[in-house]
Structure formats: structure tokens, C-alpha cells
Length: 582
Image (cartoon, rainbow, N blue to C red):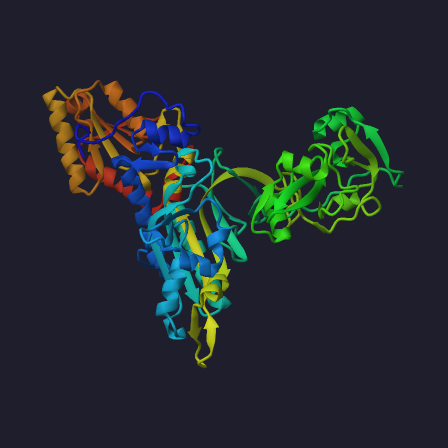
């Protein structure tokens, strides 16, 4: 491709709306353009990257026994109603009606529609196992689209669904996908970790997320360097850590705490350790008000709470709602005398002796609150968020934390959807059994953004060779110099003949402008054709991630480039070792 013909509308300034590196650089380098909030057009360079990622994904899915198909984006409400998720999925689902008044949705995911397909076509154990996948757009009406491609309302996803006879078959499919996903992200040149994760709205009883480690990640990952444990903080177990204090409970005492609402304000005013304060947080769970208790120095984990409550919907109670029901402002609510509101306490709460809590009266708190004597929780469970420094649940070593971008997730669904939609098969004895399912998703467009988050510098994007829009850029220093231009053209033709994806920057621009734009776009390898090429027969060779530029012989440069590109594609771990960010 010639740069003079390439549609790459680069930007000098960073758009004000772009908060993180991937959003900024993909806009500036001419890979994407915003059509609406959370909806983007992929320009030619961006679309080439998407195709590269899709190609890697297809190869690994096919190698693991997957068969590609294409499911409809517009899905009838009936299959979602059969599974029970039409109402439960929430406001993220785009719903629409056709001219006849029939209800449909834009697919946020495809468990229902593919289960209905298998229900109609599979009836014997001889047809199993079956692994079907697609790559297409998904639609979710995010409340707050942000971070460019990382949280959009329209995005590209690969989703594979496995159908097996039993749990042993599901485990085999799950293991194959785990390996395939590891291969995908390794081949994409990404540093990632597979972590245990919550199953969320998809359901099932076991899941792993594949996290690309990056500062811009929305997820917090806890991991252990001494064993293989790693988990999303949403599900990481948090063992209780009792606080040393008074041995004997003291009488309950109400004290005046004027205007002190927050943990910090109350503890400073009363001169108590935040570990001795009982934080009472009110939620609406499927419309019912519930109270959750954690220590003042801890954070409540809403995913854990929702699992304990077994609720479909969980939302923090609005302050007006709390005051309407209890007659007291948020900040002064406590578990003592809370009436009929059920109380759920974290594992650490029963260990507290003579704690501090809101008195359910404006500007008042209780001293010497003792669980069991002054209030009795309906249930005690692990409700808090674990953190770095706490013991690993497998080996006891201190956990470490990192931020991650979820680019893939695999689930054991079991029979959740097959039972709901009647996807049954007859076993070798003629008895009907539900198909055992798994589902496995990769965010294709998220992977593109995550790669930029992990691989960029102050000058622009630093693409791994495997997913770069083009592998090589040739820059003649002086296009008007006939000798340089002709040499650049010859090398361009030689590289193309070797099957190298190459851009010839044939524009009549200053060399400095071309270098800046090449760094912004992130071509992995830059070949500069200058006076020395003509006079001495050398070409300046520079990898995008290296500060070193070296002169290599003009003779055989195409062969040298092909060998280097082949090495980068075949052994990415070895090839990138030692290069910062790759």
C-alpha cells in the first residue's frame, strides 16, 4: 500500500473526550472515528487490525474443534422469555418491535438463540460433542459508554458454545478453550493472566476471565507469586481478620455526633479506630430493602452480596428512600433496632467487641455495639472485598494486585439453558438427557484496545507484529531524489513479492513528518532509504519498540525482513523478550 493512497486521517491534537491511551491513540492515529456515544466506525487501519485478531481467533477455535456459523443479530423475544432472561437482563438490552408488534432484541449475547438451534437439530448422543462459534457484533445499552472501545454499546465479539453429553465432556471442552484462549492472547503479543471470575448475567457455576494487565483496566486482579492462584477481586475470598480490643462487652451508649456521617468523620470525632466501626449499607434487592455490614476499614463486595441474597437485581438504596423508610439520613443508620430490615453481616462483624455504629437517629451513634447481644444478623457470610497483602487462599502467601482489562471469559453453563429451553438428547440407552453446555467469549474490539493500552509510548502505538495493520513501513528521506525514490520502489516491490505487508510512504512530505506519523501509527519495522542507501548500499533498520537504529546491507534486505517477521509471528514470547512493553 502507498501512503499517498492510504486513508489515514491522523489528528495532531488529542480529542477532549478521550480519557485513556487506547482511545486517544486510536483516534489520533486514524484507526477509529466516533459515530455516537459508545459506537465507532473502524477506518481501514483499524479494520485491518480487527481482521488480524479475528484470523488468530479463527485458527485457534478451529484447532480446538470449533465450527463457525453466523447467528442473527435480531433475536425474537420468545426464546429469551423461555430462558427467563427477557425481564431479568435489564436496561442494557436494546428492545424493539416489528411492524406487526412482535418483540425482538439486538443480541447482547447468544445463549438462547444457539440453544434453540441445537434443540431443533440435535437429538442423539452421536451428534455430541459440538462446538459452534461466530464472530459478529453485539449490542448493549451501556448506561455510561466510556474509554472508547473498552466500554461501548456496539462491539465485535467471538462467542463459542460447547454442547456435551455430560460434565466430563464439558470439562474437556472447557480445557480446550482455556488452552485456545491462552494461545490467542499469546499470539497477539499480550501479557495476560487467566483468573477465576464471577459468572454474572451469563450464569453457570464456574468461570475464568482472561485479563490483559494494564493500568487503565477497570477490573482489579489479585494473584499470588508463590502459587498459581489468581482471581478477580469480585470473587476472591476474604478471610476474617479479628481486631484485638476489649475482652468484655460494655453497656450500649448513645453519643452525639453532630454532622459526622462518614467513617473518617465519625472515627476522628470519637477517637476510635476505623476497624471498630460497623459500616451499615442499605441496598434494594429485587425491590426489598436489606442491610449489609462490613467493618469501617473494609469495602463491601456487591457481587458477593448479590450471590448471598440470590437476587436478580441489586442496587444501592437511594438516600431519599432510606430516609423515607427509616426516618434517618444515610450516615447515621446502624444495625441496632433496624426493625424488619434483614441484616447480612460480613464474617468479621461477629468478632467485634464494643464496636461503633449509627444509632438510627440523626447526629447520633452508638458506642459499645456488640453483635449477638445488640443485633442478630439474618446471615453471616464473606461480603467484603479482599485486597493486596492478605493471605492467598491456596498457599497463605501475601497476595498482590494489578489492574486488568477483560478480553475474554469462559463459562461452565451446565444445564441452565438446555433445561430452560428443552435442548435434550437421547443417550445410548434411549433415555432423554439435557445437553451440558459451556460458553466462551473473546472481545475482538476490546482486544485491539487492550493491545494499545499495554503497548504504547509517548510517541504513539507500538503494535505487536501479529496484529499490526502493516508490518513494515518504507520511508524515503527525499522523495524528489530520483535515486532514493527508485530504490524505495525496488525494495517495496521485493517485500511485496515475499508476502510482507508493507507501506511505502511516497508522500512529498518532510522526513520528520513521516517519522512522527509512522511512530504514531505504530508500524513494527521502519526501513529508511536515504543518501547512504544510494552511496553505500545500506538501509536504516529500526524496530518501533527499540531506540536503536542500525544500518543493514541493501542486498538481501527483503530476505532479512521476512526472516525477522516470521520469527516474530512464530515465537512471539522469545522475539519480544527484552523489549519494554512487549
